[in-house]
Image (cartoon, rainbow, N blue to C red; front, side):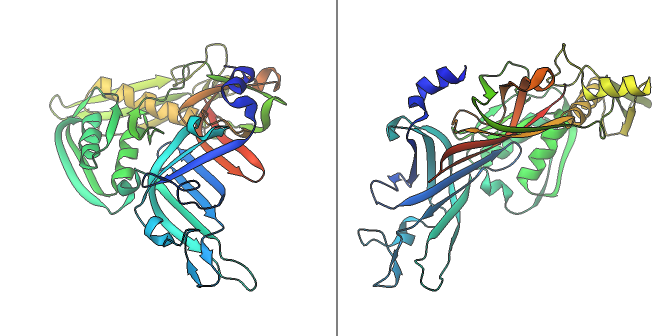
Length: 367
């Protein structure tokens, strides 16, 4: 989809708009409250964050926080209140949902001669997973099985891609559930996050398709700062384990060219490093793997994690609600080297008096 097609879907990008529902009530219409800014940060591997500011929540005569109709603000904006945010352009009924979460923070400020504004913020429905630490163990299960068990404990809808290997023992040791799932995702080279439709996704990165959207510098893409760095790159990974039954060493290997999201027409950081050294730069790791297949998959995961640090960048575009993590976008007018598909791993959507902008970060295997 190019910018013209995106424009036709978004009312030519005129009249930026947003809606905020708190426990089902439209904050700016049914209550009503005046919201001057709304911001949503989404990232892979963590809970999405939202914030918004309200300017008419304080009654100067009563010296109390009230709605314009006299209701108690904190009966509505209470801790744990359910929040749904949609952004876009034009008719509020056609806006795109980008977050569902709960209120976790309320703040304000009382200054000389000023009227207190109220800032409300919180996280998506992965927030409970960040709380506390626990220890647990599972026997003869795959990593995806464990994630599914944990997700059910939070009554979450899921989109979980099965992992193949079953482990005799899987241990969670004094870790929050979100950190533990992050560890399982890392060793499989999976991504996990809560989608804008409130579904927990645990699966391979969607980094192999062409960009769903084309942005060109000067046409939708406002700025872009890429950086390619060989400092942490490797061209080969060797995972070494031990089979206690056969008393034999287990070895799994992965080499440059096998990275997730690699483009055949371009070179990865490992490829370029190999050419400079005229040989492989090898990373050897001893890990508790019990089959050659598991060792090989672990080696590919480590190789891909390193490869994704080769080309990184930060960009800003006009507001695009469809631009979310775990998607690909084509950035053009950047010269032959930097005009290519990029994998998006975090986004920031902000609507305020200046309009609607989307900032996003990318990471890529090849250049």
